Image: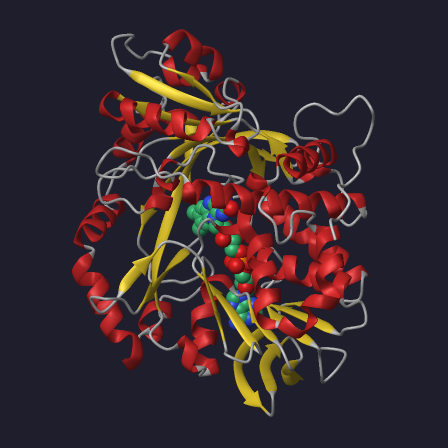
Length: 501
Ligand SMILES: Cc1cc2nc3c(=O)[nH]c(=O)nc-3n(C[C@H](O)[C@H](O)[C@H](O)COP(=O)(O)OP(=O)(O)OC[C@H]3O[C@@H](n4cnc5c(N)ncnc54)[C@H](O)[C@@H]3O)c2cc1C
């Protein structure tokens, strides 16, 4: 049971989003009573868990869908730049938490793993154009290009082992790429928040939210039975479970939203010799009809210092909104107000449905075929199949009735008293940026008071690193050094850039 009946903030869910917000609030408002309610017995065990997501520190260094080509072939890098800026904010916040001793040894949750994009045949000109557009930008400086099999063999030998030298291939490589264990990060952040006074209760499920005066009554159930707490602010950070609670809150801003769940599977390599030969995250081009986040990639991962190799995800369909959810999740989410958008999405996304249908029925041989486009020499006996986390894509009202959106949507009441996070892409990598946005939108009156503290946590807060080369180089030196990414500065630990006024 919670210690109090009234809290200054209640955070639903113990994933990376709530953990980030709880950590920020503990530092911004040390006197607040903050409660985190997580329904599972452990925090960080749903989408944020290491094996439920790909752990890519999304900085647009390798994901081809962030740089679409226009009809004239010109590459639009604006989304890639925005995502990289967002990831820089995450790196800064994590470095700040390492400096403060909230996060332990950085290699327990983040490791340098070069990010590569890899294409074949007709996609080579697109990758070349992408490389030329991005490598001019300061956030992508140092990106390398090759179309040479011998160079590829040095970067990622599995890609060319047993591949005909007649095949046209090309790749880019960014040494600054990262692999992040968001589950461990979540656990460490919530343990730190707990020490700083945040109450974290696992095994507690929030059932509903009811308006109460200018705030909310949160009804929940724990091992000792049902209880209610009141609060002026609720964050619905329950991942796939957020849509149901948003609907139960009854706020008008939540009307019209629906969810489309996409499940996934990975292949994990069981042969240590193969694992040892690869050291990169290699992203390819999406198949026609594939949702952007289901582009398979061959990834080096680190779990508690142990190297692993994964391939996937293979998309699939399950009506569950959480991996540990219910088969009734999708049917229960259909309401009169979102029926039209949902039907419109079904009508307009036939190629996606066909793609998912094909993915669901595919055999192990077909999965291996997909793997062989990256690693031609792959053998079935070296790989095991794992189930990935669920992603619930956002459906919302749109010009033709409804649209399916692959990004993240922060839905909040007009008075800022409740906010829910829907969607899962670019996901955990941008948790810091999303929670900073939430703080700005839901607590406008606190901004002046928080400004300086926020700039201590994230020195580039409110600014664009792309516009300030000096701040960019100072923050990069600090995050690289503090998070042990790349080489450590011979001068010892780099200090955080001082916050500009
Ligand atoms: C296959 C896959 C690959 C991905 N790859 C990447 C990647 O490479 N990089 C990246 O940055 N992101 C990636 N993501 C996205 C990323 O995992 C998510 O965006 C992120 O983990 C979401 O965090 P969260 O805190 O919102 O949700 P979660 O981690 O799911 O946490 C929500 C929590 O709320 C709890 N909960 C639910 N309902 C209730 C309730 N009623 N009461 C109390 N608790 C409740 C759940 O048990 C859960 O612990 C991937 C996701 C998937 C599925």
